[in-house]
Image (cartoon, rainbow, N blue to C red; front, side, top):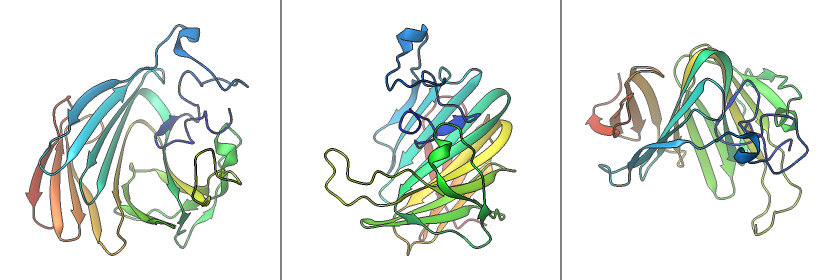
Amino acid sequence: PTWVRTTIAHNTVTVDETPMFPYDFETESIWEADRWRDNISDGELEVFQPDGDGFKSVRASNENVYPDVRLDRTVVVTEQFVLDVYRVLGEGEHQYDWAMHGVGTAEIPRGAAPFDLGARRGYRHMKGAQRLPVAAGPARLVWRAAKGPACLCLLPPEGSALVIGQDLVHAAPGLGEIDPVEPRHCVIARVKAKQALFVALWTFDEKQTTGLVCREGGADTDLVLETRVGAETIRWHLPRVSEPVRKERTGSPR
């Protein structure tokens, strides 16, 4: 109830440090169900592109897990990288915590300072939290694990804070796991706003240079993003409405 069943323990957005419905209240039960609360938590599939131009993508939304907040996520997968675009739209101001949990040890940039994540469910289990310095442009982090690195290039919302901490890790492998248990670290991009746009570019080769730029738009408009991985630069068009992602090859980002 204080970790696995909390939203912050997963790779998504937590609103106001509260787990999503139906786990949005203090309970000792590991089981909750929509029908017990006369509500529904289902989201909607907005776009599914299994055969794009050298990529696959899916977009889904949900307005049923947080009151007056719309979660809208698009994931684009290519052979070289994963692009994760998360739009959050609220009717009023909220605290949005976008969390990404990675297997392995994450490098802590210089200038990090201790940060108190508090004692709410889920948050209380993250140890050694530190606030990272925020510079212009995308933030970059690397998780190093036995099976290879995971490299994050992140565009957080303007005015956000970046926090990294170590996840709760079981002392022994779980049922069915055969690999040794490795540390897990989570990065949280936190912002207080009515709406927020989180954009992440994931690659898995430290030797590749990466770039990520938002050319046009925001959380509630059409988006134009540029990704650069190695020598290839691609411009991505993500409409506000439920229409397919469009890919456009271009030159190097300015």
